[in-house]
Image 1 (cartoon, rainbow, N blue to C red):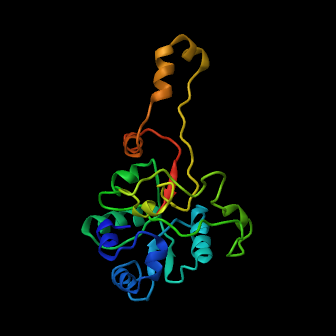
Image 2 (image 1 turned 90 degrees about the vertical axis):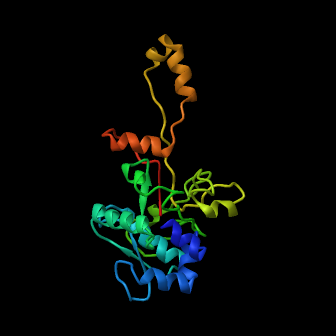
Length: 217
């Protein structure tokens, strides 16, 4: 979500946006379908599966005042970046590490949004296979190691993590066992290496590829 808007209205979760009449009115005035009385958020293209997950999350959480815009991702993202940079309210689905996160920068021009409840396997939309949209996972599924500086609602969680509502994937360093045995310095570096989301995102922007680590709004 656009950082300046979130701070102005004190909305740091999707549920708070759904329930705050003043924030909804301000959001609706400039969103993709202005004047329809609801907040239209930038979601996913049709057939990406994440569009179905978002639709299920909206139904599951009772976000009656929110609606997902389904369109081409790059076009929606460009609008989201312009809005964030201009202080115009918007919510957009994205993921990291990715080059996208170098333009929508959590803690700078946007925040990650929290959720009150994490989607389970109840399949609230009745979609075939919708039980598999469950985002609880195992352990701390639906949470991400993001602090309050980038996800203000994390301050309300006992763990201090962001209740982001999406399963976070692990990104691991791998190497050939024979190489590591012959190069103990490389093995030690592998164990201690740590690269932040923006660092990996920068590498993706430079043309290198890696799998997504987390998704969210």
